[in-house]
Length: 356
Image (spheres, rainbow, N blue to C red):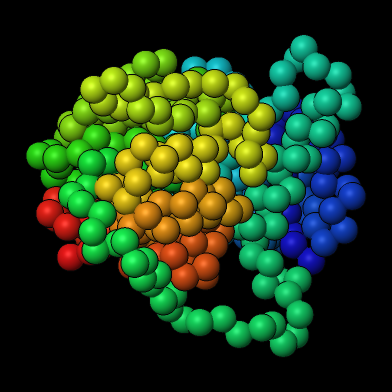
């Protein structure tokens, strides 16, 4: 069983979370705390596998509780509960930078109770399962898997030409990983950077602003008609797919609210697939920590045309879902710890030949 501690000052939200988890038979609610101080005591007493943590609470708020929990339990998964507001987004990003594992958004006051329940269930249950580790539910003799993914060798790879774009996809744990990667990339990187991070509106705006302050690049949300340029990082805005299109004399971006892919909008697959159609193999694709396998098919399309593919390794990932799917499919040229990625990504982007 996955043991969950719920922390929220609202009795209504505590009941909502408990109801959302009711049908997940492998999840057991071991306690409910009303504020951060209660949460700290109950973590020690109950030893949960996952904590859901509200941000705004009396006596000790979520950020304060998170810091104290992290001091004694550095690897305990903590999922923040946030509002879909600018203030909520800013606080959530701060919590992620302080070690929170992931977040979910509280339902709006405009929907029905049933809609709110479904929203919390659909966001929370997969995150609890992924963060707690499905090893708790795995068969006694799981199928062995290779310790290291073999790189794909494409017949066109050595002839793809110099890279013209850096593509990045990430989800759970992505904001912190992005901060590490972008901060350590050289300011003179000769290619533009296009990023899909699974996040809702407002959150992507705040994330772009935060990354803009700490990285050597100009970082902002993409807008319709944007032309990717070196020195600029364009982040897919929440609830919009970003597509790469060819136009007279160059490349531009198109935004749309087409159907979700892999239950996501924005989706990494949409960006990567359309980039493969425009750039072919003249791209460097990087998959960072994230739940699920969004990006797998987009990476496959890029790799088949000779693009270089680098992914974050399991040990440094919050969840090795997205990078793991690419690595296990044999599509990764390199599987690297997060601290090693900036150097290798920069080297790939600056190489005169992708295959070198």
